[in-house]
Length: 64
Image 1: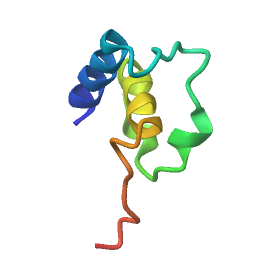
Image 2 (image 1 turned 90 degrees about the vertical axis):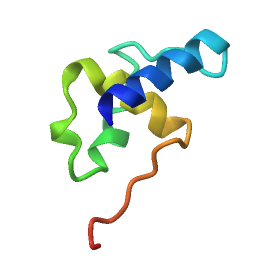
Image 3 (image 1 turned 90 degrees about the horizontal axis):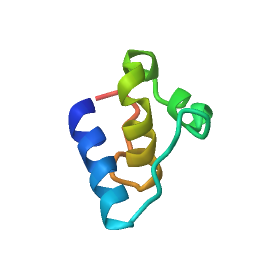
Image 4 (image 1 turned 180 degrees about the horizontal axis):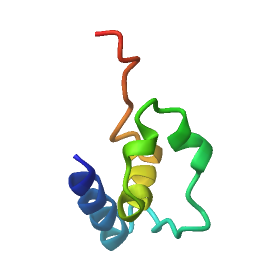
């Protein structure tokens, strides 16, 4: 799923739907709200952050 989010983030950048996140602008607090945030590789953090900010990924509470 991380690869898919990175590809979607790249597509958003190419189409002008969203500016690319740089390492310094990634909202770490946003990613940290997910229980599995620590499993996101460094190369994928920007794409995952962009996907969350765009509403593509919303997550779930893990209770199910």
